[in-house]
Image (cartoon, rainbow, N blue to C red):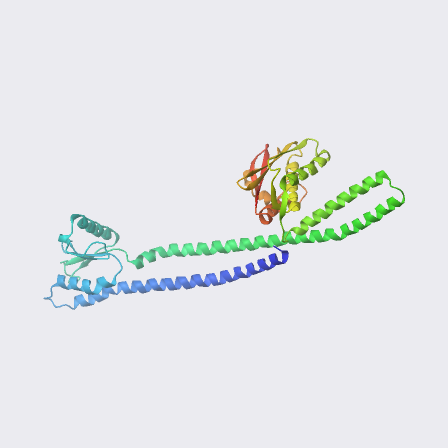
Length: 411
C-alpha cells in the first residue's frame, strides 16, 4: 500500500470512528427508549385486565352464578388476549381451564394421568413464582370461588432480560469503539514508520549520489597517476560500501510501496545472507559461529529478495547481539512443509521471558543501550504484510537461547 493511500485510509477511518460514536450512541438511546415504551405498553395492557374484571365483578346481581360468570369472563375476555401461561382452578383447586399450555383443552377429569400430573405440577410452580389470585365476591367475603395461577408473560420475561440486553449492547458498542481507536492508533504508527522510512531513503539519496560521483573522479585520478594496488583496494572497498548504502536506501524506499514479487531461490538468498555475516563475524566476535541446514535447495518462491534479506539480517543480527557476552552457535534451518517454507533461526543467547515473545516485535522495544528497536518490527512488517507470512518467537529459555520462526507461502 502506498504512503499516500495509507494516510487517506487512516483519515477515513478516523472520520468513520467519529460517525460511529455519534450515530451509535443515538441508535442505542433510540433503541432503549422504543424498547422500554413497548414493554410499558404491554404491561399496561396486561394490568388493564384487573380493573376491568373488578368493575364487572362488583356490579353483578347477588343471584348470579359466580363460577359460571368467572368461567365465561376468562374464556371470552381474558384468555384470548394474554400471552402467558394461566391455569384456572375451582375452590377445591381442581383445574377447569388453562391457556398457553401445551395440553389439550378438555375437562381435567378426561385427561390422562400423565397430563393431569403435568398440569398440577405447573400450577404448583406458578404458585411458587407468583401468588395465585383468589376470586371472591368482595374483599370482606371469606368464601373463595376459585384461584388464578399464572406464570411470567412474554413482557415480564423481556423486562427481566432488559438489563442484560442493555449491558451486552453497551459492551459491544464500547469494544467496537476501542477496537476502532486501536486501529486508528496503529495506522497512525504505521504512517509514522512509513514516513520515517521514506524520509530516510530520500535523505540517503543526495549524499550517495554525490559520493558515487566523487568515487568516479577519484578512480580516474588513480588511473592517470598509475594504478596503485593499495589505492585500488581501498577504492573497491569504498564502492562496496556505497553499493550497500544504496541497497539500504532502496530497502527503506520500498516500505509503504507496492511490491511486485518474482520467483527466487530462497536457499541461495539465505546462504548469501549467512555468508555476509560469516565474513564479518571475526570483527564482531570470534566466539560466534553460524551453521546453515537446508532442505529447500530447489525451492523457488515469489518474494522480494532484498526485503527477505533485510528480514534475515535483522533476525540474525538480533541473535548475534543476544550472544555478545557469551558466544555460541547460531543455527539456521530451512525446510518445506504443507506448501510452506519454514526458516528457524536458533541462537544460544540470553533468551526471553514468555511475556516478551510478542512485545519484541513492537517498535522501540530493544535490550540494547543504543538503538531504536526497529529491526524486528520491520522484519514483522516485511514478512506478514508484504509476503503474507508469519514471524514469531517459536521458543525461548532464559540463559539458553531463542528460536525465531519465519513462515512463507510457497505459492
